[in-house]
Amino acid sequence: EPEVTQTPSHQVTQMGQEVILRCVPISNHLYFYWYRQILGQKVEFLVSFYNNEISEKSEIFDDQFSVERPDGSNFTLKIRSTKLEDSAMYFCASREIGVGTDTQYFGPGTRLTVL
Amino acid sequence: AQSVTQPDIHITVSEGASLELRCNYSYGATPYLFWYVQSPGQGLQLLLKYFSGDTLVQGIKGFEAEFKRSQSSFNLRKPSVHWSDAAEYFCAVGVSFGNEKLTFGTGTRLTIIP
Image (tube, rainbow over the protein chains, first blue to last red):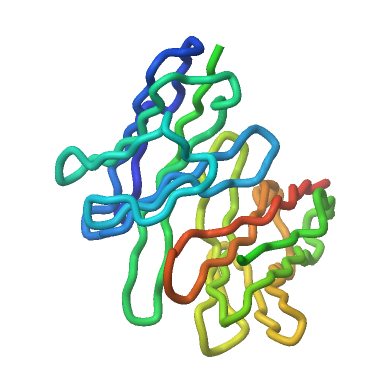
């Protein structure tokens, strides 16, 4: 069964450094998402992406964040200058739309630790 | 804007006992509703979903959920829990058309005791 994959599973970085989180969505899906979950809190929407552009972003997704689909398979989230409060689990999701279905499938997540 | 409330932060049940996890949503139109499960250190696995039609939906691992429009609820049930069901359960709502993002509840942590 196709699944969303994410790399790395765990990323440790110093405050102020840039990080890139990578995702490979399910191949025939067209909508992609990033969510994050700060430890002990709920999952929060960051950004949605369709047709090579952002379709919606949350207040969290400020100028330090960017997303890209550099090729036909990868979908990346870049944080330009990480802050301590960016420490969280980041989930990528891709969306299946069809007759009678509209479902997001999540990857296993990347745990980002900012020191 | 849509919202989800999971009133129970933590629930403990005995193995073999029945389970009901509560979820209430707020949304002006017909929502898409989901339950996801997250085992420790793992990602989010889809348990079941509701879009339309039969208000009782069946999912994986023996779970079911019932959509009650009058109560704005989508409670998750299982007749007999197994130790492997211990996890965090998240209810989520999506809009029928438009921005497509999911809004999650705060989650319910399920502990199973022997």
